[in-house]
Length: 111
Image 1 (spheres, rainbow, N blue to C red):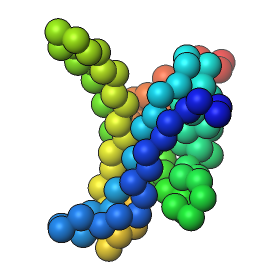
Image 2: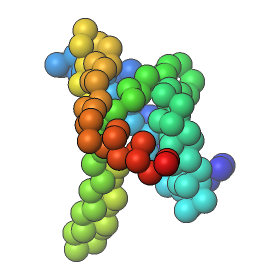
Image 3: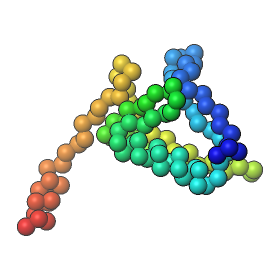
Image 4: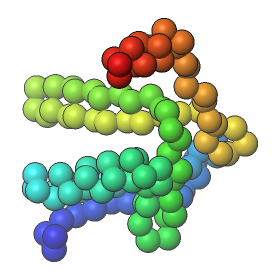
């Protein structure tokens, strides 16, 4: 990865006190896939390590996912975003909705 260029804006606070971390750099498909796998492993375990002095992000059990593809005349962009509410700077836990009908149908399938 010696030819990889990365700009990292981590922990910097903007005028509205939002914290931001961004990893951006030129890499090949294998390197890009490795970044996504590391991110996916962290999401699955509930903690994403941002690396270095940047710390970690706790990922709640449920969150919103947005995958966006944009195409201009001279550039294409594929962006993946995870979003969830916070309370007092911490991830707000939303209780998953339970559906009594779904629970009953699971029992019927096991018989």
